[in-house]
Length: 405
Image (cartoon, rainbow, N blue to C red):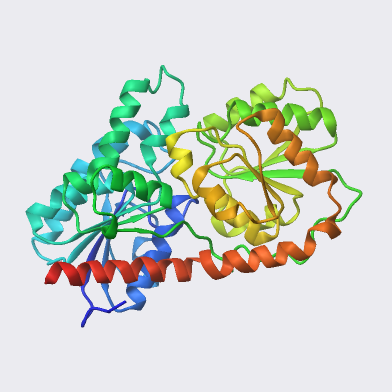
């Protein structure tokens, strides 16, 4: 793909604190920005206020423009209301900076900042790239109806998917082929969409040297932000099935003890023989050590448009670490891992999910240990952040070049 003749100035917009990444979609921003800077582009990051901002700016070779009106991160109080208001303030923040700094391209990370970028396209008369690491509102389908009524959720999803068409943006990076097809179905040109999937840091999640030794209680692990769609009826029924079949099993939850996780643990403690570990917040770079000593990694997501569109980071990290994995049949994940022996897909049914966990716990290590290395090598070659971000920035540069013609 052709490169622009000279570097350009990028305004990078996000609703999450830039550094350190808190996991999930926030991790991607760091690697994208690093690739942009490596190519010589001047990157201005607009994000919620972070600690040690001067040191972070120096570390990454960027300029930071912090949002300081209120504290904002994925665990903040009244998070959803803040998300709704944030685009308005972000738009003003970028517009103010543009009075003294001419930006050549706006790059939005996630749908929330995409709203601000779309509105700024006409005002600043610059190309806009939207990157969608998920279909954010699609996850709300699994929320309780009193929190997220069905008609409201469907309207929000239609709005989110319409953003590229609504603002006539110049290019879109999508997390999956499934999401790309939904954007194209809404009328956005397919040739302007690049599915880039979702990556992981192979240095942070190396292939473990060996699985845990036999003779100790098996550990089933899950890590993440533990939102409402992560731990629902499927996860609860799976825990019940496994606890009955192998009562010595320990369920390990790696991540902040959110309200969603606390509610799940409260319900699960009524299950006979249920045993768990909850680590609390764990920095991204320290998650791998909790995976290395586990027997099975799980992704028990409930079915929704959002989960079908997602290219779930944790399954990539499990496979990259050499961990046998069980996942519900999410379309985007299944299309990539359907022939990978290290991943077993259940139905959207908790008992079936539990059976798949048991099948891994009963499987002799010798049957899959060689395959673990092969699967890890594949995801490292294809989904490590470096090749993934090279593809994304290649597409961004090509989009910018087209916009100049």
